[in-house]
Length: 461
Image (cartoon, rainbow, N blue to C red; front, top):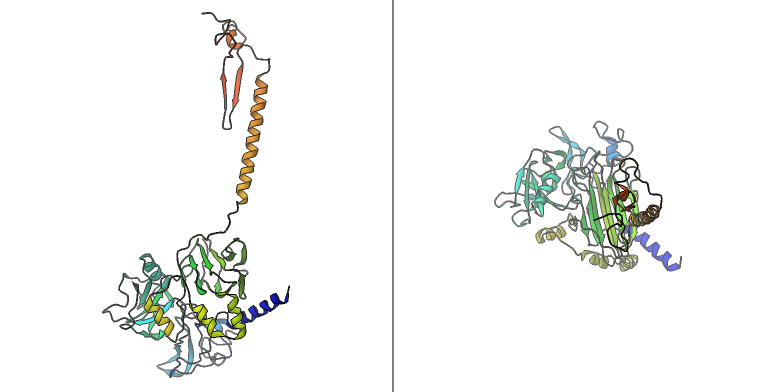
């Protein structure tokens, strides 16, 4: 290994450890912020109430004495957490109001990619003007799937049971509000937020799709049916192909695969060789660096148990990106990564996402999967075996046919005995010819022709 290779490896390692995924400002990749591990320690950044330390709340259900091993992110701190799977992170407070000793935390950076925000719904005009429906079993993915089937780009949930579809949001008539206005639980899943009274939470309908093609330098891939549990019998492929990339980094922000046969694989896009395989026994534990510009993500689930799934971040690296990072010029690298290709969200939504303080990324691409192209086509092994078997069978058939022809030329031809021997003497003197065919054996009687014609000299007129 030469010095240039060593230097490049060190630069790449430094880049990975420092700012591999700095373009994703969000700190949450679940719909309810259950994975939040940030440092906000008050219910709101502006005039919020301070949170109590989790190791001092022994009078309450959640504390470090009951959960000493860091379950749910609890510890000797007072940061907002969501240990019970509520609709968003919360914390205990010292000031009791009407017997309430806890409050939700309004965390601007805790908004999963694909969640476009919480918007006011005045009804005239409606926030999303497409198809709508109501259901007492509504979940986020139920609404997203309904709108996706109707070929809408956006799906909105309101009051826990109403689902609205549309293609764009007018930000002038429907301003964005804090997430706490949209924390009504979904009727079908009390761990998910489904808007509020007069407030609609809007998602991109490409979230939770089974398969997709990615060409942007960075993105987030969710398991099928996310944020619901993935369904049974799922087989999904996602392709990540970033032209000009020297390597692609992958980071699973959470991974919940509960069945022993369910699995996630990363494959080289050109050779289809498995680079990494993960399941419930061997979950991902660190960042994964795959050399090249083309990677295939494969997911399989059997027909028994289901789980939450996964959220996977990827970041494409170019040679100039690593050099820029080593020199400390982060602004140029940000400008290079911000120029993405591929389908985008509606113009209004994209502008809002890039301008708000939430900083959540709208560069997620969920498109119907197509089979990735290959630079070369190799014949499968089973095809070679099948052709060899066919050739062997053909040789055996030819040998058997030859042996049968040799056998029928023998002079020992059985004669007919009994009273009919005279009348059948002609028939008994005629040889039997057996013809072999691959599918069947045909046995029939044929007269041999002599040089006098077709009639036998023993037969009269």
